[in-house]
Image 1 (cartoon, rainbow, N blue to C red):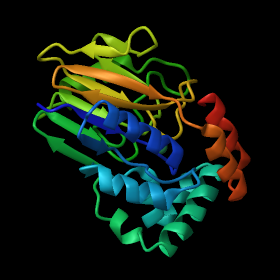
Image 2 (image 1 turned 45 degrees about the horizontal axis):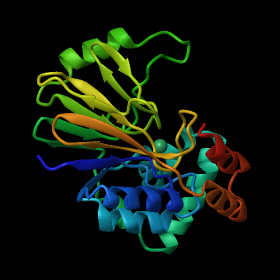
Image 3 (image 1 turned 135 degrees about the vertical axis):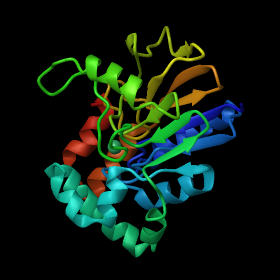
Image 4 (image 1 turned 120 degrees about the vertical axis):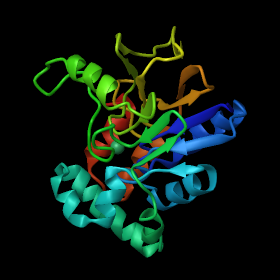
Length: 250
Ligand SMILES: [Fe+2]
């Protein structure tokens, strides 16, 4: 199997996307999959759509693309996300790119791998979490899902939660500076949550993506000029919070 890279949740952040693609080129990885949410939140949705079109052989639909196409879906967003998606819709419409976003699906299976924006049961909206909003562990549900839902595949790559980790029947594994590569057991079923290129939420502001060579998952972090992106967010009149969070990765 040729090594491939998996990116997700670019969210209109052109500086982060360019830095990640440059790192993928430096690593000589020719295949790039995008798990959706190329737009939303960030200041350069058109350029990010065009760049992912030219570089990614798989482009899934995320919930933000879905909300572009179906404005009623955006009503469930937080106020700042809704403001950003309404602004993004106008920009994408003016650029004539809306139809192209409608061609993608939220999941795709390739051999024993499923690629999804959200998670297995609801590939568009479900969040793969380590705990629910009350702090209760979802480990039991995870193990049940790995046993019951992983039927024709054994590895599921997901985005959507903006945090990089592996979710296995043994527990959750997080990459960090000293350990960012994980060798998989042959029959192991697991989720690979690839993190976010354009809006990481794990406390590390660097852009994040994953790669896989058939037996080893690697997580990568790439520094990019997030102050430039934040300046564009403010200049476009998008919510201040969307600019501030880039510096802290939250
Ligand atoms: Fe997202």
